[in-house]
Length: 120
Picture 1 (tube, rainbow, N blue to C red):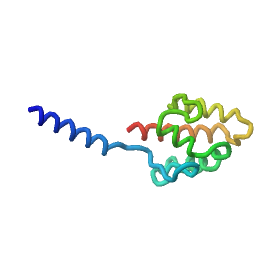
Picture 2: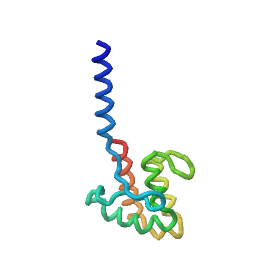
Picture 3: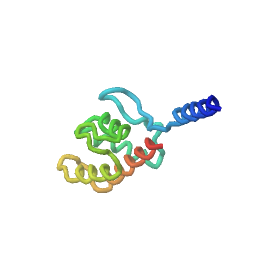
Picture 4: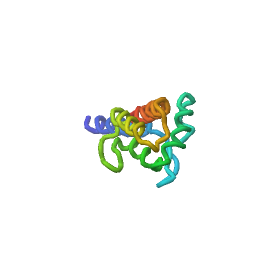
């Protein structure tokens, strides 16, 4: 009986680990970025915007790591939907961000999508 239970648990663990849905990423180090192929059409404009505006101050690697780990790489603070909103407000207030409210809102929605996908 123990063999069957152990076998069932092992099979369940194997099935769980292969069913993991994470945000697709390409590249390494400073060239790390979200895979454009995995971004739905509705979020493509925000993704393209993020590729231009957000890299003015930091690499996309920082954002990818934050989404993947749930922690901001520099501060170690949680990176969740509430933090994404706070970062959006912070970027809106930065004089050199060159982003308006709509652009920031679109990027926040995209990052929330990435967080949701990573949590699956």
